[in-house]
Image (cartoon, rainbow over all chains, first blue to last red; front, side, top):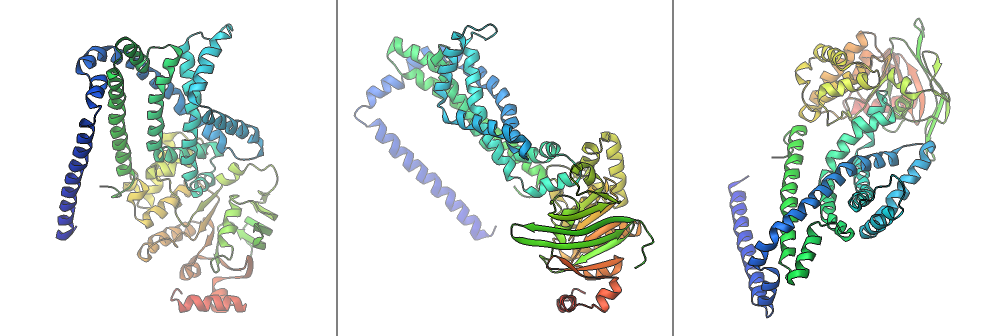
Length: 271
Length: 252
């Protein structure tokens, strides 16, 4: 970079800092000076209330963590399987492809909350032998069903983004279709879609709050309980902070992971 | 033409169309064992398609292709089995970017030939060492020069111990100063008796290594003969025009 370029870079940083400070100060002042601020502050940002509800919300949030971790363990492989099934060539696999498409269309189209209510209340009500009665179980199943549909589309986009010449090279070595997909296409596809996969994982984390509808005391349900007792919404802020406390480090970790992989594979592509 | 050796590859009246465009219009070609046949002709004359059809990467519409006397274009032929015996190297290398050089070269033997990893790696290392690439075994393709990448791609095909090697304009994507290292490798293979069909724009190279040269024009083999014949006394006006353009471009 030239000396002039460096000077412009420094000026850019200064402008960014000044404009950011100005904008956020203005925004903060507007909120704090609004007519209803004292009331909002007492209702949402009450320190005493925060201290009182935080341990319970944290305890309940642990359930959210378990829910999304267990669900994700099933979602990632199942969605990949679904995406691979959709990529199978030839007329023989037409029925399988149709099933995969129907599944994806259905579970992407139906609101998650409806799947959770239907399965969470409906499946145990069947009272069938061997069908679990636990609402938590069915909550996880619902999340897995819905997110597998979303995530399989992410994988599929990745698979289709790998140039056909890669498949040709693999097949020309005598690998069959599945070997070419598994050893050559999928590893490249997955690397490319890590950011959108993280996107869906964060979506899943937030949607674990929907399982509260079934009666499980997760973070959101806990805030409702707190609010019913105190008519104060500070516990919601508690829960929001907890969710963010998970997603932000996870996002930075994924960025680091992707950057490390790029460094290894591409010489001098990224600094 | 003296046909002292057995026939390795034979194409009989091969036709191939993409949509309404007929890319191959009745190709007849015979390649003897240990022979090197070069395909020359303008871009779009059908050279690449011909090679891709032989590797069964493209299905043909009419005609037959036989390898060692066995028809590989017949119904019910296991394409994976056929491809194990036919190597192809592409213009754009098509190395697997997420794998090291060693993993690129061993993938075929390990997965298609079911070789144990240790055995496949030992063979691959021997191959890499023979062609001066052993010290790059742990590198990812992106860290290699174009010439090195294309040499690795050729070794990846060779690792399958094919009876027939198809080279599809393997130097066309390379910087001029990197061409010779790749051509040198192919020369060594030719001297070692590898049966090859080589589509190329390198006329000097074709003249050196080819046993026979075929001039493709509009999806047909318009003229075929020894390099001497084709490059010094081409019969067909189209061949003469093509070679005149090549000479004018300073590539012969």
